[in-house]
Image (cartoon, rainbow, N blue to C red):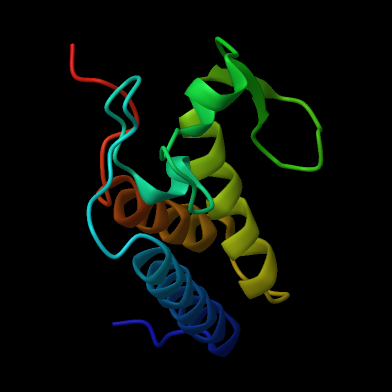
Length: 130
């Protein structure tokens, strides 16, 4: 079995710590499961800052789709996503940006990003059930 690269180990540890900080912040902001009264979204990333009523980003902005930059920094390629999905992807990019260190393979970054997306998406729904 190949030994873990120190840079990759550091990156994974930093990313998991930042993810945990994010989860704690969201749980503190939304201690009880709240729901957007307009669409039923319950994900605290989509609900954003505490407000009454707790409107999700999609219902607050009234925008159909966002053009999300996959590499970040408003660069192409871009993909159309819902506004609530856009916020989750932005949070993933933020966590990766503060965690990344030189020498980390793309495969490791992709796998960590996938794990972060799963953890954030499992916090609640991003839109009403069909």
